[in-house]
Length: 311
Image 1 (cartoon, rainbow, N blue to C red):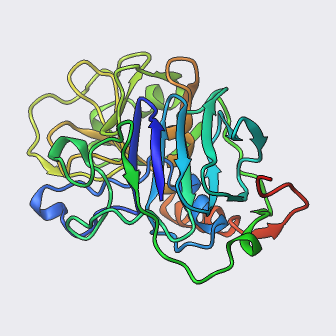
Image 2: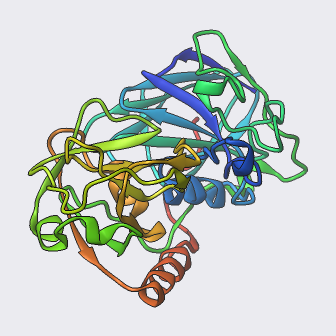
């Protein structure tokens, strides 16, 4: 079990998401960076859907109330156990009464802390994920909150020192691949693909608002609200695109110019707010499928010669 000492500005429980409820208006939720979340679970020998802690934007600190095996992932953060620097993107055996600190040090927005056994908060509609707006799942963490960890029969020190065989890179200024949306002909795709955008500070887990040259709409009139998923890029009347994120609504009435492919969603999620720049380029469904498979395939484990436990 972990105890929250100091949460980040937004620390929540996230598993792979609350699927199967979109028809009732319930978002999927889940991690903002699904790749870092999945990597953290892999490193501690959890299934991909296990619940982790998602730590947003600022530092956070926890106390281990029992011996545990953890892994921390995500760009722009550093790991300390009792003030001792430890390796990110690796499995670490942590003894009881040690403090676990994730310190924000560089560009990136989201970090993930996985514990072997997963965090066992109550299931709500089949998921442990927090969706703040509907009060589904546990509320964002506060000082003193206790986080139960699932039981394990594994010898935890034997699972330490696992790292990824290939590092995951997060460019500061990514070019992101998209598929044309159902209302792509409402706008100039040339303007969309040649523009450079930054992420507005008003962005959140529902959507990333983009700042840049506003897109001029070529067709007038309203459209009926229709189904919407994460990655859809809506263009409201002001012309500034919004990329739907983990807590995306299930329907929307703004025209959708494009959809961000799943493989590139982690890159957008971690692009630094206000300072990182984004551009888009068109791809195909076949290329999108191949890119996702290649991204998943890079998640392989190796055992490294690192200090993987505290003394």
